Image 1 (cartoon, rainbow, N blue to C red):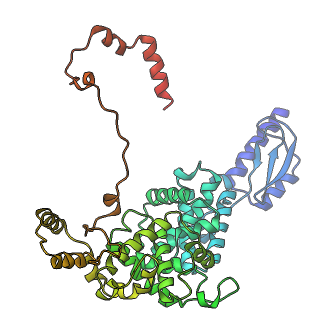
Image 2 (tube, helix red, strand yellow; image 1 turned 180 degrees about the vertical axis):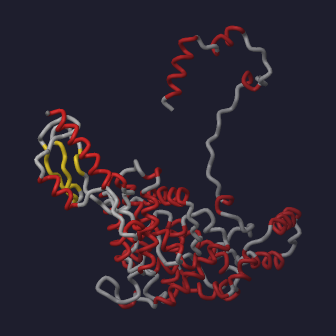
Image 3 (cartoon, rainbow, N blue to C red; image 1 turned 60 degrees about the vertical axis):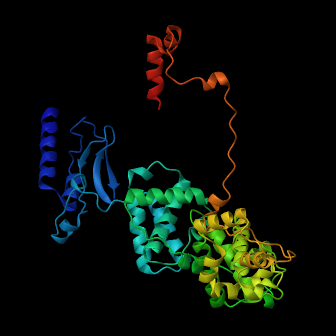
Length: 445
C-alpha cells in the first residue's frame, strides 16, 4: 500500500511539472494529504519562498516538490507567458554588491563634477563593461575605486570636457602613477579611442582651479588677477616653451605651473617680483611639483637669450628677476627673437672657424660681434654664452654616465675566437637532476 502511494505521488509530481501549475494549483496540492518526498520518501515537507515564489521543498534532501512561476525575459512578458525559474534566463537577477557600489560611485563623481546626464550614462556603460572584463575580476579594491575615476575621465576626454587626471586623483585620494596604469589598461582592454588633450585646453583646465582671480583673506588685492588676461599670457609662454623643446617628453603640469607664475608676475611686476614661487602656489591653492623649479629656470634662460637681441634691453642690466617686466615685448616678437637667439649648426661652425682664424682684426669688429651675441664691448655686463643651436635640453645638458674601468691588457687581447677547454665545457653541461630542478623552477614563472 505504501509503495502504491509513493508511485501515485511520483506520477502526480510529474503531472504537476508538465502542466506548469499555477499558484492556485499549488494551494490545492498543499491541501491534499499526500505530502511526501518522491526522492527520499520523507514527510518533512516545508514551504519556502524563493524570490517571492512559494515552493514546497523536502527538508531532508532538498528536493523541490513544486516550483513557483517566475517571469524574467522581456519577450515573455510581452507575450504574457510564464516561465519557471529553472528555465529563466536570469536577465532580472540582482547586481552584485561590487557593481552596485561602483555604479553609485560613478553617479556621485559625476554629480560632484557637475557633468551632464549624457556623460553619466556613458561613464556607467564603460564601468559595467570594465567590471565584467576578466582583466578586472581579481584586482584590489583600490584599483576598482580607481576604475570608477578612469571611466569618468575617459568620458570627459572623449567629449572634450576640461578635466585633468590630477583632479580625479585628488577627489578619489588615489596615487597618480597607479591611476595612470589603470587608465592605460582600460583603454587597452576596452579598445577605447581618446583624443589627445592640447596644451591650450590643459592650460585652461589647470588654471580654472586657481584661487587668484578674486581677492580674499588669503589673496591680497594686489595679487588678484583677471582670469582671461592670465590665461592668455600663460598660453603664450607655454607655446614659447613648446617651440624651444621644453615640453617634449616631459610632464606638462610643472611647465604650465611655471608659465603661470611668470605670466602672473609680468602682468603687474610692481609688488609681485618679491613673491616666491612657493608662495604663489600656496595662494593659488595648487601643488608645487618638484620639477617646476627646473622648468622655471629653463624658461628664464630662454627669456634672457631673447632679451639680449632687443636693442632697448641691451642697455639695461636684465637678469632672471627683471626679465619678467619685459615678457610682453619678448612674446610679441618671439619668432624673430628665437631666430636671432639660436643659430643653426652651420652658422655656429662658421663663427667658430672665423674666431679661430683671427678674422676679427679690429676693436670695432670685435664690438659688433659682441653686440651680435648680446654682450657689451666693455665687458661690464655678463655676456650670454655663444649662440648655440636650438636643441632639446637633454642634448645640451646630457646626464653624466658612469665611467667604466679601463680594461687590462689581458682582457683587451680577448677576441672571442679562443678555443674552449674541456673542463670549461663540462661546467655548462647539466646532469639529469639539475635538468629536473631547472624544469620545476621554470614552472613557477
